[in-house]
Image 1: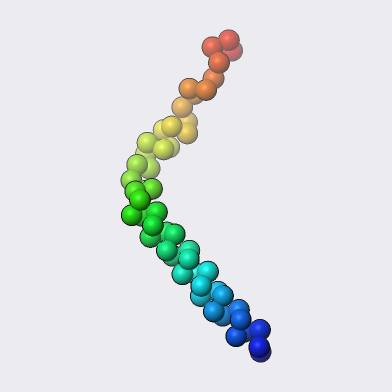
Image 2 (image 1 turned 120 degrees about the vertical axis):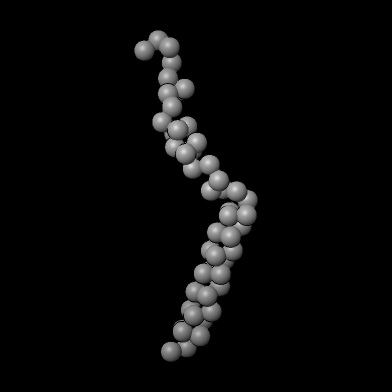
Length: 51
């Protein structure tokens, strides 16, 4: 039972840190250009000409 006094606040703290990181990423514009990121992932710019 004493372990719960340690684990519950720790879980709440980790959840709050995760939420803060998500809100930061929203404000930083990480999710603005999802189609562009998908197109860049599929592009073959790194293929050498000799193939």
